[in-house]
Image 1: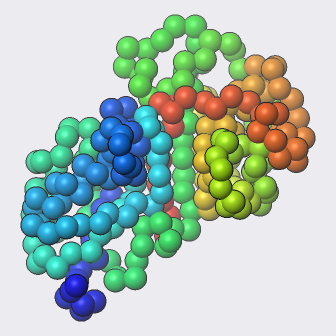
Image 2: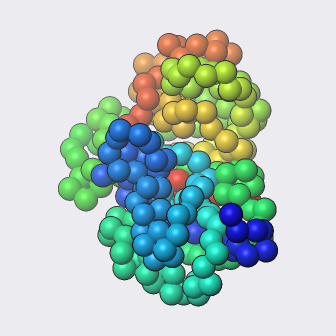
Length: 249
């Protein structure tokens, strides 16, 4: 194995439409993932095995404007050539928008301080020919003022067990949300959530709960939060409306 001094640590900024993929992370016995495809292309360019580390998983159908990933290589290829090669060989729905050599101890996931996700809702009775892959079409008018009022209660450090999809693991469900903003532009509602990390399906569960409140189907998000019971929260919003916007270091 090459020693530390002979390796370079390369950071990528990756933009992708997740519609056709089974999420970011490579998995056994499943459809192709974004990580798997990029690793395969890197192997062909660099002529060596590469392990790509992302800032975190995005699920099947979730998109990213700026996913961060890094890998180590002994190749001396220039960053400009590598970026050009990647974008010429990757599918059109996966694009490398940035590339940089970073310190050896940088790790896309462990070094991250916060992540910003945006969820998009198309709040009208008819769909869009252009945005159907990137927004949740919700027919019932939503009370934005009520959604904003209840959303404030989620900001801060809390146990988000009520917003975690069922999964058998013992990991802590305590996370910190730094900001949660909701705004409307035309028929579109945008929900921005920035936090230090998110449990499985947390953002989509929060969005589903806020939509439940805005439509009058649910009330009192604080009570839902304190119950630590997923059954009391709203539906899990569709993956298509979710996009990873930014990772901060």
